[in-house]
Amino acid sequence: MAEAKALEVRKGGTLEPQTSGSRSSTESRDRVEATERWFRDFPWLHYSSSDKGVLCFYCSKASNRSSFGKRTDAVFISAGFRNCKKALGKFSAHEKKHSHCHSVTVSAHQSNPVGAQLSSSLGKQQEEVRHCSVNITSSVQYLARQGQALRGHTGVSGNLYQLLKLRSEDDPVLKKWLTQRTTNYSSSHAQNEILNKIANTVIRHIANTIRQSVYDLVPHEEFIVLYRVSKTTGQGIANVAIDVLLRLNLPMTGLRGQSYNGASNMAGKYSGAQAILRREQPLALYVHCGAHCVNLITQAACSASPLTRDSLSWVHKLGILFGLSGKLKSQQDGLSGIRPLGLCLVNMTVYSAA
Image (cartoon, rainbow, N blue to C red; front, side, top):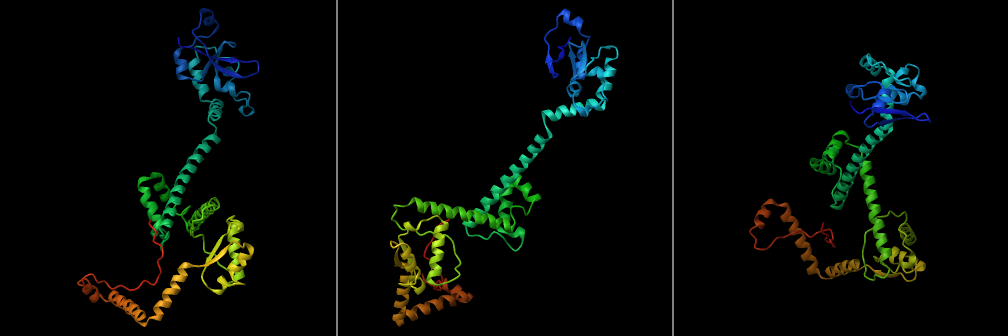
């Protein structure tokens, strides 16, 4: 005979399933006869040694609930079932009753609550959204680093969507997300918000680097951001500069130099921006911008020599002519080492690798 399971009734009213060992002859007389088939076909059966009968573990455990009601079999809750001749029929009938199904459902929810199931599903969705958000942010960061436009004439023709579509070929989670959600976290508002956060992170990193380089006397040029000034006077520009330093948590006591062009509102001795800032910090010496000085010197030198001025003008016009004429383009291939080009109108002072 198979090993019987017992449901002991404690003094506190709790019902706990227990597994008894091999039964002695005395215990066999105190218990009703049960076959191995009972416990195999009806796993909810438990033998109670105190009641000397078979009980339903789930119904006995749920009997103290107010929602259980009176539509129950008392014989399977407290009295104990002892009629072995009608055992299989009674067991089958009890298993189909609403009270038994309700007790089994309550027990299942206690072991795996609905809240936990919903939390598991919600956690999986959050993990997928987090995974896709990381991919979108990294894609936006890459395009911004390369100076590429994110959006196109339509939503699906932009560089961002096409890059995400390419990355989704090796990422089934991202591919599913792009199929179901085409605007969330990739709309124009979301893109601008991501760019703003990236920009703020870069600015904070630059500011931290400046604060940590107190004793670094090597000049560094870092682009922070373009600010719109309400007034172009020296006082208005100086106020903007002071406000930027305060926003970046850079103290005026650490300011040691200024470099602007030679305009009066910037380099003025009394009312220029540099003079106003020097009144706040006398150690902030003003130096005329070297690039502007080179530009002014070059312009003056070219204007002073008519030959140089006219030569540069003719070279520029010749380059434009070769660029517009298809016939001259084909003829220029026959020139040995001569390739007339128009002068670049934009002064490229810095070349940066990707």
